[in-house]
Amino acid sequence: MAHPKHKISKTRRDKRRTHYKAVAPTVAICSNCSSPVLYHRVCGECGYYKGKLAIEKAATV
Image (cartoon, rainbow, N blue to C red; front, side, top):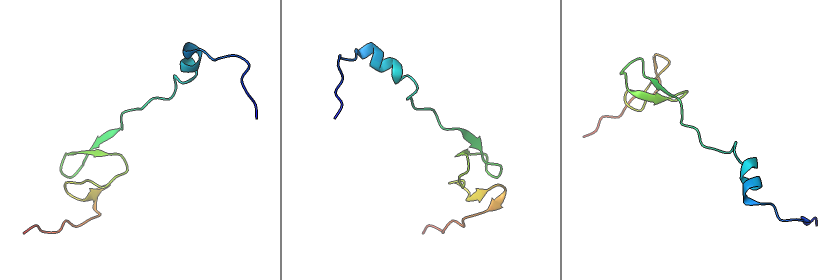
């Protein structure tokens, strides 16, 4: 198994990892109820996706 000949400094290690960062998800506005929705997801409020009803909400008693 290969072993490093010299210790990699924290600065050098961290420079290599600069691209590993979390990005905020893109949020759209639902065309039916105007609530914020993640892209390519069914709206959690009204159940619409791309202007069509995708999920019927069950009535809560």
